Image (cartoon, rainbow, N blue to C red; front, side):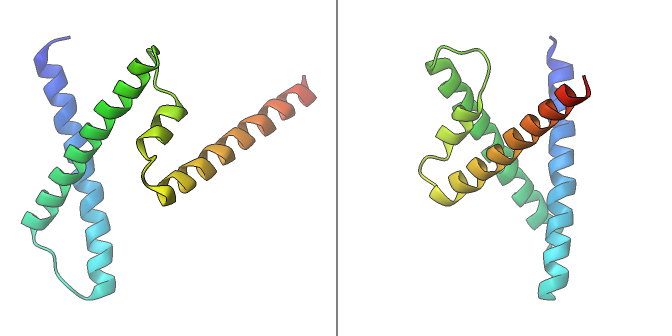
Length: 112
């Protein structure tokens, strides 16, 4: 893969993050009756992007350490091992997804 498509993908991701951060900031500013500068949104976007890149690298490292080539739910949960609140939310989310998956599997068995 060449560098240009990788850079283009990175820029598209940053644009999507900027858009999402901007929408969240706008909603919060309306509720709090305050203003946020474009520089604030840009700085927050860079912070979110950098944090996401760091998390991705760490999660890949957990999978590699476990001698796996594919990232699993356990790797993501390992990443938040020091944040009990986040871990609880993610575990609940994973359980909901697994429950829905089981329901869909059972429904397809009943039809077939």
